[in-house]
Length: 301
Image (tube, rainbow, N blue to C red; front, side, top):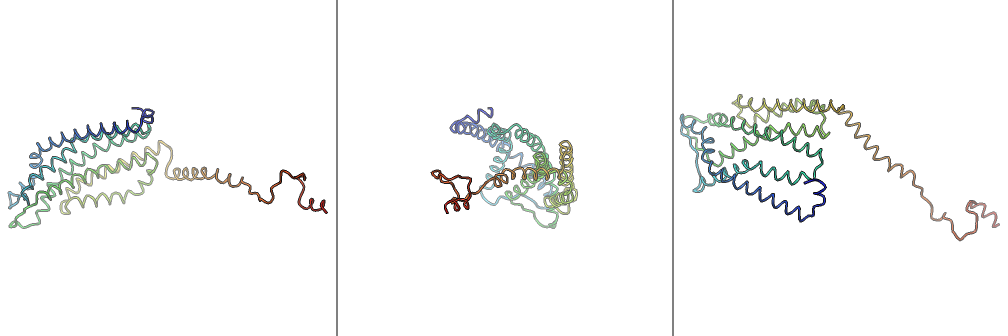
């Protein structure tokens, strides 16, 4: 559907298209949820692997604190799996509904962002899945070998899910820097000036999502993020060099545009003449309009 067609389409047609796309996305989500429920035992085996290794040296197990706890956990895994598995469908439906109203440049940036963000998000999630068993091993090692490690299953699942999603989002952040640079908001020189702060922020984030005692897991999270930041900086720098401007030229352009927008207002204001209502000329008067007030008084005298 072209932009011209989208502009001519009435509101009822937009609503019908939105309903069709929502139905297709809902069907895909339902199918993905069913598949996720059927494979929830496999997901639980992956999540339970660190606890199984821990049980070889001490008493460790997952605990369900209610009668429906196991079913609730399987249902949550099914819903989350359904959202992930059906993401290509519902993302395609969302952008298929929105893209007809975008310009060619906006479409280029949108699809470029998705083409770079989705693989990086998947890579970040896989990194989180690789890191979390070591995190469980290190965090549970603070307990004595005579103690029992009984973990609440729902809390354990939330812990793993947050780690995986956090690393996935962290891997996508450099793409936002590139997008902001391409639209002219964030020059490469500004990104380069903040590289120390960015590296410190990456290390702090890696320290928060990984155990403080596990330096190797922290390195596996921080190193790819730092490389992605440097790659984003390099792309932004090449883009600025190809455009032939830097931060100073961007500021100068914004100032010139602001002055250009103010010029019509100032010229209009200066060109406006305020007349005194008392000095208006009566059209019925036979006096010479070029005569002054003093001249009229002299003639009358």
